[in-house]
Length: 244
Image 1 (tube, rainbow, N blue to C red):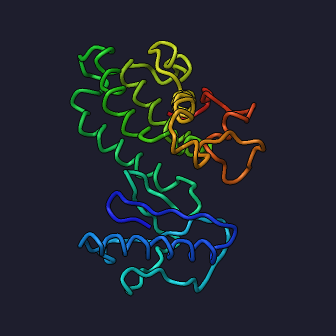
Image 2 (cartoon, one colour; image 1 turned 180 degrees about the vertical axis):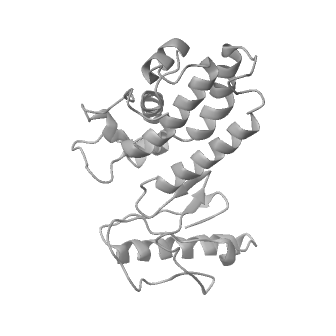
Image 3 (cartoon, one colour; image 1 turned 90 degrees about the vertical axis):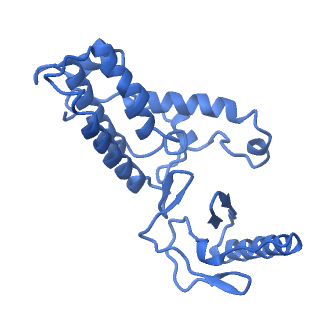
């Protein structure tokens, strides 16, 4: 449940219990707003359920006696730049980032093309300063996305490196990364998560709510970001057979 940058999150074994807890939090928040002569706007608030379970006819949340409809299962909610789907599969978020990345590449096309005279180090600087931060934004949160989704992002990186090096079609992707010193995206994302995870334990709120707590059992679906620390088969590279 959120409006602007305020989020109220509840978790429980059953949806009914979670909704009841959520409504209790909203009631307390409404009283606080009323005390300070502020008003919550229900029309600018959304409610979203994240679960793998099937559900129908759930109780609606209320703010100041006005009902808040649940967000459709197939729709996402955007929070702090992340597109959250009901199963947290990150499919829609990654697809949107891909579209943004292609748009940004088209804008940079006069500088980044096979006939461009720009130096390779300048091309790589454009990638690491403009393109990669866009697509890997908040990657510690979605680091456990499926390898198929990460591969889509890697394919675009391969294309960029091929343009930067003005490489022929037969040059392997592995050689592209070796020559440029740019790590595979899966390696980069995993390292970003590890750095984030190490710092997370120094945050009081994260420790209190066990956020980022290391998993004891490897989950198959959906995976938690910290599950990649347990998976010995985690692939941190993309094979040469990946399409360009």
